[in-house]
Image (cartoon, rainbow, N blue to C red; front, side):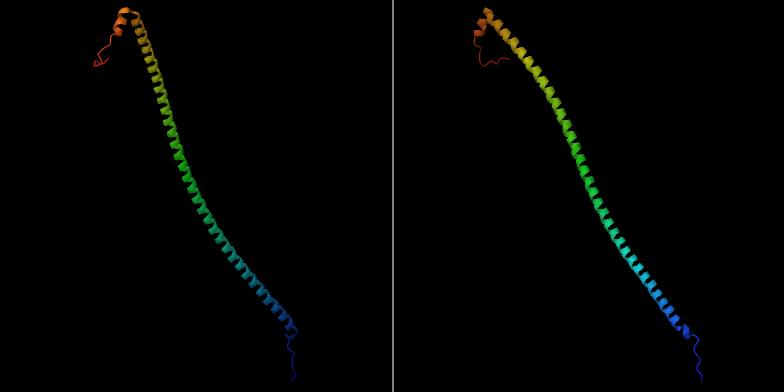
Length: 145
């Protein structure tokens, strides 16, 4: 029997090279896809971590804003109380000035009355009849009006 040569034998090496290249291409594409998925997973983890950090920062900012608003309200209360105290102090100052003016008037009126009484006493001492009556001692049980 005569052996017939295999017609595909000369192409067998080329088919093997093409097969290996095809296998290498499939492995390369699978590796790239795996790498892409891993990068996507890492990116998703980073996005989730950034979202958590942002939520925490927003909560902290909200807490600080609430604290600042509370301080502002407290300062407004202090400001209002200070304005009321200043108003009361101004009212008391006006009342003191009015009382001072009245006291000055009363003092000048009393001084004028004392001066008139002293003048009248001097005039009475100058008169001989009045002078003798001033020398008489009155009863101590009778109060003088």
